[in-house]
Image (cartoon, one colour):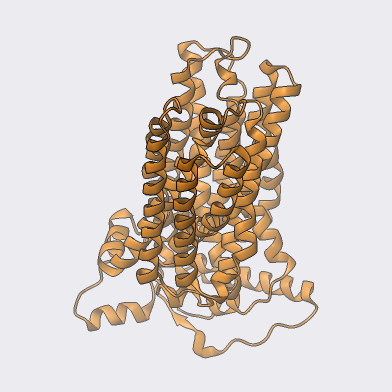
Length: 492
């Protein structure tokens, strides 16, 4: 099949259609930030007799179960997203999250049966959010014109911190102004209420025409892209320019491609890109989990900040993370992916090293420490968001969602080590030298991630996804493979 659909998508001007799509799909990150923040904020509350009266160990296991759910969800729903389509999955994954998080609020006791129910609902909620990462990143990248893709994807990923702000403020109000036995339940219902509204909006979003054409659904793809074009023309009030026929690509409908074929793509076709994706995701995940999940411990152990006040410091921390992607995200489209990845990772790592020295010298207090974190993560947040952008655009369409799921899962597994390691380094707060060394190690890790990006990053700015990574179903790719005498590695 010969198609101009990718070129037709990339030539579209920005329109209200794109804005609605980004809002409807981008809520996934808001929900994740909200969910994790609420769970962290009410952790101590769940140990009180008037709530569930759980042990500290039982409460700590909640976060682990949720993260495990995200990993399983990313891998499972990532595969289904490549197989069944982006639209089908971003409806299913949001519904899964709604069920899991909503049912958590109805845990009525701390007996063995209720504990199983509690952990199961947290696992299900995590599966939904993990699946969202794979399906949503794929859909956004495939529907956004190339010249806007970087800034939009980075901004959307950065809205995780809008969810963190919402979760922190709602938890603060509910736990301080509502009876505890009810407040923690309402906290877990904030996300599902928002999700229900978004579920209705998502019903009107189209399938990715890129996915349709690569799976042989020619008529459906043509109907979808015509609908999008008509909507954009109506909203802009002007006709769209013609598309150069030279931009057409020829594809053969793809058969189902599993994780074995993905492994061949990663290690045979794109080994340097696999190293790049893994490095960017692991380094940012380790740093974020290490700092964010132990930040209140640092405030309490080293600066004597009361636990009931720490949410206000977390709001400031989250705002710093939110501002970065929205203010410098466009530079990834103008200055370029390679330079900006290197700069954001290296600058945040260098600033972390400086802050570590100031911390050890004892010249910081709770406020100046928070300001320092805000500056560091202004850059780190943009870099971390760009890591998700990178793994979603540098691999072929047929395995895009699975690739996102795999790298997300790898990042979560390594990131889970951060809070454990840094929690041990913090200890009782009487040995700051241990945390000082830990911060220096974190700085080196981030700078190393920047250096890898400097040499391995792909200059994907303003390029069509098909120019960055030729689809496995592309006739040109198959001809090139046969010419090399290698045979096609994509039959599995």
